[in-house]
Length: 161
Image (cartoon, rainbow, N blue to C red; front, side, top):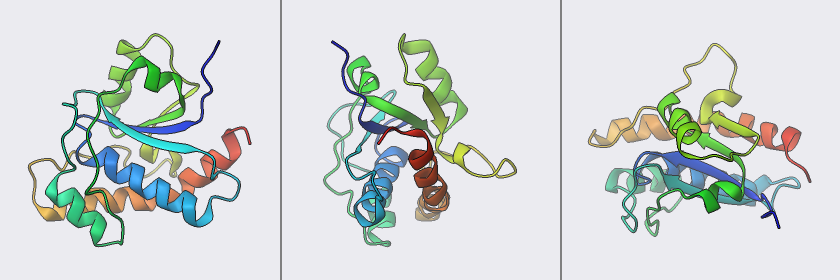
């Protein structure tokens, strides 16, 4: 029996910076204005994650600054079971998408960069802030915040209700 695809999945490398921030942003947006998408689950994973690590200190601070809390996050490695539950997987860079295609035999219909939902003339990749200063984390967060309205529109147009 096939597993129901009911999750919007975000992936990055270690699941301590970018993908937990993206997960938190989409979860908060769905709670505030899901407009029929509230039943979606939201998750984040790393493609090279060590399980059980907290979100990075600067990720926690950057999200607190906009009223969101990722302090309870625990990193997780992406598995085929997680992929099988995903309606869409959003990666942060082209290397994440390449890794998904090379590691998993069965993928959902939609494998995109988080910023692929934006107009064609904007940068696509979200650089890894790991090891950088707080400013890099703010820029990372803001590049995701910019994409959230377009991501919600993409989900409304492409996901079954």
